[in-house]
Image 1 (cartoon, rainbow, N blue to C red):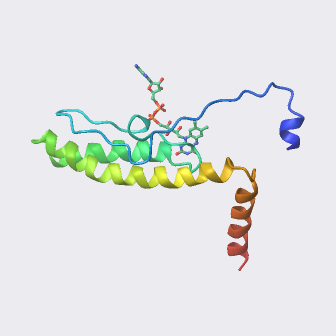
Image 2 (image 1 turned 30 degrees about the vertical axis):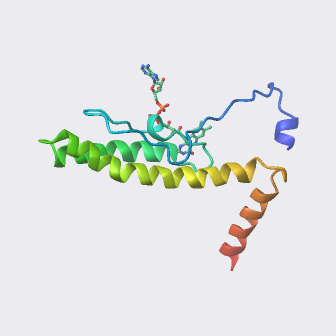
Length: 121
Ligand SMILES: Cc1cc2nc3c(=O)[nH]c(=O)nc-3n(C[C@H](O)[C@H](O)[C@H](O)COP(=O)(O)OP(=O)(O)OC[C@H]3O[C@@H](n4cnc5c(N)ncnc54)[C@H](O)[C@@H]3O)c2cc1C
């Protein structure tokens, strides 16, 4: 709290955007998406950049494996990527709810205390 109260710079409220959990689109020939363009999520799981890099790596692998059939490559990439990003969107949504709720930060403090108890046990 002191860090914010004693800060000399003005507070800038920045909006956070996220696509709905489970957001999907129909297959378009020759086209797919990676990273935030596919699965924009709030930053409360620390997963967005990790997902983006994994998407890029797996898309490259799929194209190498199915190089003669680009539609098969894109379909196999999306078959793994879409459920994975949906799982990440679900738990980052839970992280968002933990921080922004009518009990202020209490659920977040409880979470860290439960992690600490687990480490000490
Ligand atoms: C506050 C915050 C904290 C985060 N913390 C973490 C974390 O701890 N761990 C983690 O893994 N992720 C984290 N993320 C998420 C992570 O930053 C993103 O998921 C990641 O940057 C997505 O990469 P990307 O390449 O898909 O998109 P971006 O990084 O958004 O890159 C897209 C690029 O395309 C450019 N662009 C857009 N439109 C055009 C156009 N028309 N023509 C040309 N260029 C264009 C943009 O300028 C941008 O450079 C955080 C995000 C935020 C906001």
